[in-house]
Length: 180
Image (tube, rainbow, N blue to C red; front, side, top):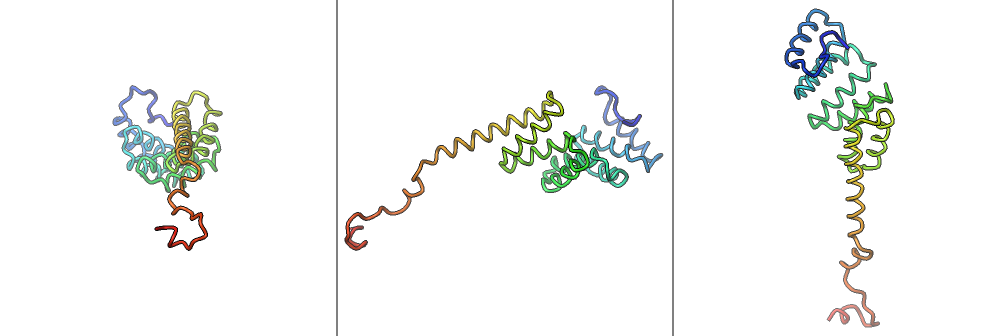
């Protein structure tokens, strides 16, 4: 991590942002600086600013998974799921253990009601870090989603669809007589 990045949660992120912007002006070819700036912007919930910083970092560090997983999370926070998925998949292709990218993918699976894929992805994160609170929360959401789906399927009784059809006639009379 760069010397300008926050070293503790007590530092003012706005002040760190200003320091990083100054450092970027002095060292525009240092990809770690815009990467750190993107993370600070995420902390400040300035997702558009984070996305801009991560884009600069991606130009300087195209093979760095952390850059692409940062982009994925920023895209997701901005409601751009397709872009988030693309960036997350790229990050995981560069580093299969990138927990941030895996959690973005798990959330995308949840939004798409793909609870099994979400569960699988959360288990991958928890194998990396059993104490990951975000992955545990996502896993719980996936299990709730699975239970809701199962409950909804139980509400559809066998033959419920057939009940909407007109009743079968039991006599050999023509259909019009049976309906009278």
